[in-house]
Image (tube, rainbow, N blue to C red; front, side, top):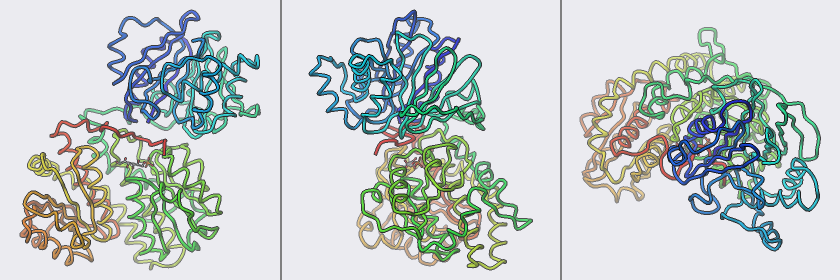
Length: 612
Ligand code: F6R
């Protein structure tokens, strides 16, 4: 969602901030802006639309400044327009702020400030916050830092903020609660950002701010204190990310780069954890909790979107291999029920970004009821990773395309490793099955690579269906979540209406939709429900539906019945999702490109959904 970039040092801040904002474009946004401090004069430049539009509008007009703050906004309070774009200034125009998150009690604060004569220029909660800070300064006579702290103690909601002040050149103040903020430390310079991507090309030394901490850079020094004035020594970590992982590397879009990266990202998610030859499987972050998992009464998996689909795959894996009862919940629903959950339950939270607000809230709720929480996250140091008792990173590398691809297959891989390790600990799989699964898993990257040999054929099918208005995706067993994921991928990037269903459910309603204009994608690989799927295909063909079937290499029956086939290599049934999802990602991508969609930044979507 919104993005933050701020800089204080010796370089020219404006181009650096603009470049950083462009690196954050993948998060999704609708306007952008920058505030620069030049000889104690605070200038704000902002504009609805892309960062390139802001750049074009002010090109050559901006002063050289060595301190500044920049923002990409994804509208929550007030429509996307120039006036609602960040930064916002205080009443006396001496302070400016950028903010990710939501100040929930902004309306009551605004009311008080209006009575005191404050004049607002936007509809945002953020503008209220900076006026409030100025008001506290004015009323109490405290300095800016203390006034920020006092204001933040009063606000309800989530925030990552950075504040610049005309009275304090060379100073930036930042704070966070519930919304990530990372500080990069260079030679006589500091970078602030909502994630590490804008920082990586300048420094690998970073500090992740914790909730309720306020960071101040003054006279070239960084200090961190809590809202209660407790001083913390900044804990400097090394970023492991490389610059090329956040660049397109010759591909047209990040999404296609990330699809083709999957043999590597799946291998990375197993690296150091799995060595089939030595019967070795270990998950560093989970080892001491394996008994807890093996003895759990129940596993509750929470996540949203694609991560929820990975959870559905994991449900089959844990039940089949470890014989543990599993429930998979949308985090957003779980948090607003009164779920029956206790200390014998294990909750697994799945999240690529590690910042999804609903998933974070579900974790807090489960924690308060005594459950043990595991995280399966991609972004190292993210809020969810830090809120869990233990976990395993997916190590897929940065995922920039808004539609999740390599994160899904890495999540499924890591969840498979956890399920196998739990089954082994519990004694619910034989040694032979254990060794066979480890071997098969190790072979998955090569099999995914083989699916890419069909890319040209998938492109041709995409061309035929470019202007379809609806799609149905059907699968059974482990291919049911894959059907959901295929439908989600298509709708989010091509804007074609698509639905995923368990194939047998079709008869209970969706079959009414089938006619010669309805493309139906069947996940029809050779597994235990193969015969049943064959019958379902016949039902669709009998009603003139146009069938695209994902089949196992060498299958001759289904190709004789359907309109189009895409082959995938044969894999152990438990690992089906890892290969059968790949053609669906490619099909969505090619259709979206042919329709001229903005594949990496589809409309209305954000990469990390930090509001509920
Ligand atoms: C779909 C997609 C979203 C995310 C969802 C959860 O392609 O990207 O559905 O999967 O917003 O995000 P994370 O995994 O970051 O919690």
